[in-house]
Image (tube, rainbow, N blue to C red; front, top):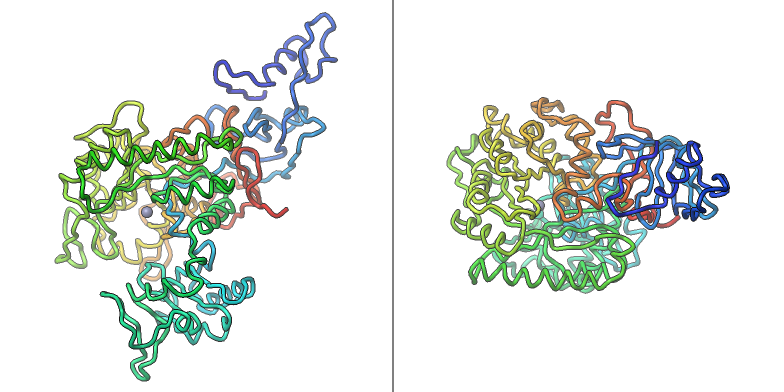
Length: 592
Ligand SMILES: [Zn+2]
């Protein structure tokens, strides 16, 4: 039987279909001529715009978890059923996509991104997680061959500690990029690697004045620049010819959106401001991604929290009016909103800046300084709620998480607002897991931060005795705490199939061997998929419009290259997205 879940009052052509079916005592009759002549003529419903058949569909809708096919009209799912059922709906103008048995999943929702921060990787080169330096050079050479001469090559995310631990040099770049200035940031953003042309264009010499905390790295023997610029020295390139065009934020967001679509992502919770840049992309019709944006107040306030949030609410209103005036949302559904506010309490475990209840195991003298006082945090949460902003707070250490829960307990959100959330939650005590549940707070977690780093430095920082409190995905679900999954791109891979595979295998490199740890906290594929789809939708105002393959929702879906096995394992990370659809329109690939 075809599944229909239309909201009350909404009638699709399937209502007509079933009227006809009931009279004609036939499985599925689409033609009026097949009905008895005594019946009132029923207007023939329009055929769907698009059907997908012979698919292994994961709907993420518990009322019908799996299906073989579905139909789309006017950008929305209108029927879900067997291939035979859906094929009968096909009309002369219906596009039929026979996927030949591969898996189809809902459009993926990344619960934590910084799209503009990652733009360099999207427009430039992405060297993240690549160990072999010769592979870095191959990627850079390929990029140069596809760019006009003198265009900057940006991006990077290289990590020399994955290979030989030796910093790269300008001499490695010069032979392969004689006509292109190159400036590539490392994975942490602390170092920049440039070629000779970039250095020349920027007018930098070995004795150029350097901003405080910056350093031009020189060869100790020759005194020559090596091509590495530390911290603020990277800003010496900011005014170089061509750099402004190369870092244009609107072009950068467009590239990041296209990259997200290529990974099957149709919606993100983005953690930055830059509203006007996103609106420019939207106005150009290139925002093929539903962006639930977090508004960030200044780190240092020169006004009261109430005044700050009153201004942010006015800004939100301006953005909403701008979006509402554009007809795109009628045919594509929601595309952009300022949905919440993003705050930050502490830093990260790697640099001992995460706020922990007990000293760091490998550096007991390290004292992390919070970005805000507890009183300030509480005042910000209260003011945000007063102005109808749900709150998302970066908290990585177990003490930072407690602070935020205290703040949420003190100033509960108003009924009807999307839930408050804590971002990262890398360390959390069992008592606080229970408080997430009792306070109705969402855990927004990024799986690859665990698998990359538990063996790398987390065990050192927190010790094995505190490790059971690290990245507790399963404990959250078992305690009825909703779990939203995401990438925190560009700090970890944007590819959701890698992130979901991480939750399944939960492996990290410990003592040189890649192996699982604390396997009880791993997830199933179905749980991970829920965290990357409907759970993300539930945090927005769009819970009933996106997040699953359900009749009446916008037709955001992803076609994979193979059928997933009955029990999905880490091979998921090797699957490819062959097509991504947003509101029934293909947004990846766009060149066919
Ligand atoms: Zn982040």
